[in-house]
Length: 278
Ligand SMILES: C[S@@+](CC[C@H](N)C(=O)[O-])C[C@H]1O[C@@H](n2cnc3c(N)ncnc32)[C@H](O)[C@@H]1O
Image (cartoon, rainbow, N blue to C red):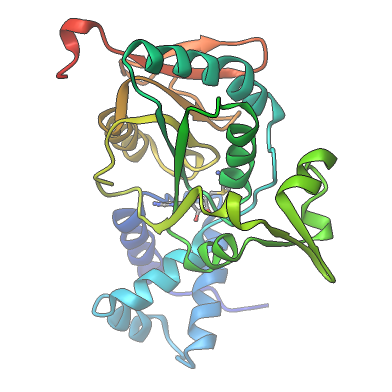
């Protein structure tokens, strides 16, 4: 059996990671943190955690590597199909009529915590299929995991990972390669992949549709609340927030309205005319 790492330093790392990213390690998932620390020590050929701590507090690049290593990047195309049905049948029609009323025809989407890209590519396919030709859309997809973003940008997925893509979409938006499938360029160009740590301001404004699914589950209450407030500021005066299906704003004092559609539960930001700045 492996020797436990020095408690004092594991706690220091846990606090450091929380302060840097909002990711919270409780007593129950502390072994994940210990395993990741051990992997970093091994990769860097360092034999004690104290030396690693001294390196990391001075080296922002190593901090990024450690943060990447403690993230969980599990995702799937069309994960929680109810969200994509809500996008197609509820959100898109509502946003289109709101924009038309205002004489606008551009939609901004943010996939926050996009992991290896399956979520933003799924959103892009639905938008391509269901937005009128007179409308344009841009998707920003961000994550703190640099290795996941590399996969996302490449847009190559092996057979096992495309099982949830409807056949019609697979034919239209993917190119068959010998070892799997590659996202076609015209879909890719709808998405801008960015490194962004959700702990900080994104600078985004007027987002119409914000997907942040299966991300806040790793944050504690304080970090969740701060993030939801930042989302509120980044979103347009009439816009929608989609959280993961085991995540909610329940018990959090926010101005988001809870919306239950025929397919899933989402949140709406809807400012009155008097509340809008523009
Ligand atoms: C489980 S994946 C969810 C992927 C996708 N949204 C989905 O629901 O299938 C969680 C993602 O959140 C990212 N993440 C965690 N903390 C983050 C932070 N502070 N800033 C940005 N991304 C973060 C992780 O790197 C990971 O890729």
